[in-house]
Amino acid sequence: MSKSVTIRVPEELHAQLQERAEAEGTSVTALITEAARNAVRDPRLEAAADVFRAFITENADAFDAAFPDDAPTRTDSSRAA
Image 1: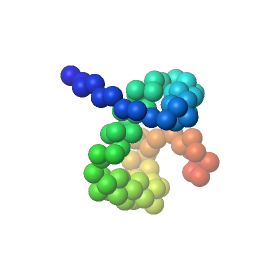
Image 2 (image 1 turned 60 degrees about the horizontal axis):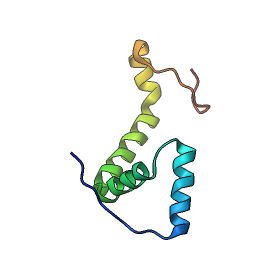
Image 3 (image 1 turned 180 degrees about the vertical axis):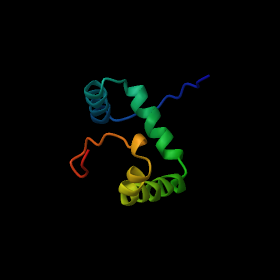
């Protein structure tokens, strides 16, 4: 179930939201909903995600060596496939 919320934004911001929504193939409502989710997200979750990403980045070679059948195909230029 969802709840309707009405907000007022300046015309310039609305135009920017419409442009971005069109560029991303989404709606203004979806953009604002995501912004609202981000506004209430616990900042500790993002900090924990940063720690996890750093750990994975620093230890990717060891994981790939230990589990070669499960190693993902790398598409970024920082690591060899």
